[in-house]
Length: 159
Length: 176
Image (cartoon, rainbow over all chains, first blue to last red; front, top):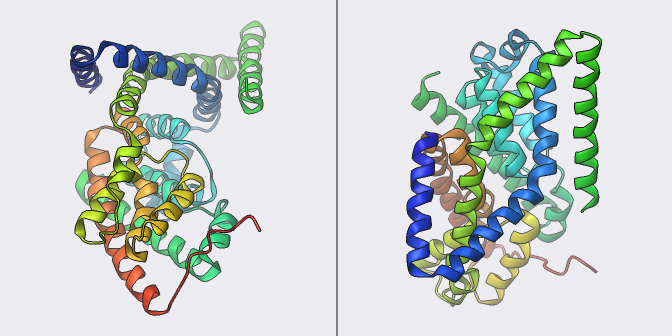
């Protein structure tokens, strides 16, 4: 997987340089700047993650959100996803870490999709613009879409 | 440096100190957390540069303005495709999506198109998606997109039609 990613990046980068050298250098600078900007958050998330996997035993994690946790694990994932606000830059490394711990994809999907679409914390802003009723409906529908994603993931990955 | 960055860095520093102290007092669990940090960090290091280069290449080569230009008064099937692409450029969720929805509204987009856009902006953000592919794999991301895009399209169309019949208006003047 990693090699695949590097090859694609390299091909696109070469192609980009071929078309416009100036733009490509700008892109590389932008990439470096973004990465440095994100580094503190990243280090923070990773250290939090290291503490979690060390001090919360894998069995406990498995019990609550592992493949045998059933509906409860999915509900926990959906709940956490809905109430938290987290940039993808922090969320996906966290998801990858959970995967390393043996947490199934469908639970991860429950967390990541509801994180992207259901906004309990951002609800006040949405309420102001769309009105309370519509904002609530929109979030409930988003939650159902997240649940659908969980089901499809469960079928496709068969975990 | 932003305030949040300072907070994150100081917590990270606290973590380093904790691992060092664990080392000196022979606290095995503390030391283990340091080891897992290094492991995870190294594996991420193999992915991160690629993810950021891909995101930057995307931003340099495809301009949001070009997409907005194409969003005229047409609310036919093409409009949904354009808002899908437009949503790819979203960076900050609803904070960014709502003002853009206003632009769409002024350009004469239907409520269906606007609600489809609001849905899309949560799920197809390109930088985020690149990050997701890098960390969770192409299959995971493909499944997620194939499930959520049609559902939000469907939801947007239905929702917009119902609301248009009820003369619903989006209130964009939230600052008052």
